[in-house]
Image 1 (cartoon, helix red, strand yellow):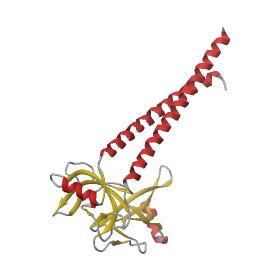
Image 2: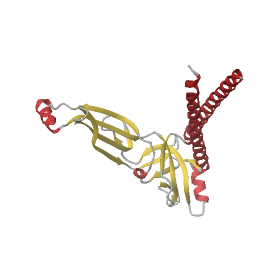
Image 3: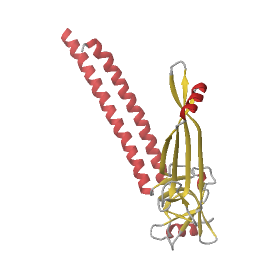
Image 4: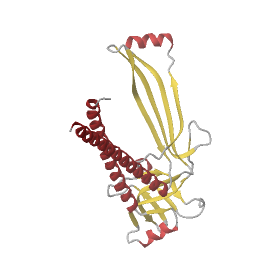
Length: 271
């Protein structure tokens, strides 16, 4: 490889390495800030300690906290439409039509999505401490459908290919569109799963603890798993961005040092 070719490409590689390092450093700082804010939020389990803290507060209210526990349905849970002996308290069924449209310019069928429909339902539920399903503190969860977060578990997924026959194929050929497949996905917040909820907690009628969307506009958030697992995931993510920052920074420095050394060595040979 000639020096004429090596120089520009080395400089491009150096610039790209430092650029990626800067991006990863920014993501690392963002994740560290997010982690710090997360650690500042008081966290509780659905136990007597939470009840004592609420009783000791002036207005029997905690404006924004994290509460973790095991999901327990109040009354009859929702049954999965596709998976036997699978029960939950929140259920979301999504149906998506996959169509193909003929593109005259490209002379091929182009995929597109149409008529995506999601039906979501819920039943009353509460958070309890593991092993205390009959007795102990219970945290009633209000308005679960208003919560944000990727907390639903996929319990069924299917793809049904379209079979329209000769007449259907002829009609679709004239219209330039044809149904390719019908996708269906069922997700649930299952009974017995661990859940961490971020929101406002209030104490009513002496012993009824309720979790509801915050009045101050902060996020009403549901996260699968316990609080420690959530912190660990954020710490691992921050460490990953830090590692990539160092990797690309060292790579860029090494390439820059190699380029400078080659340039100085070339000048010394000329002299």
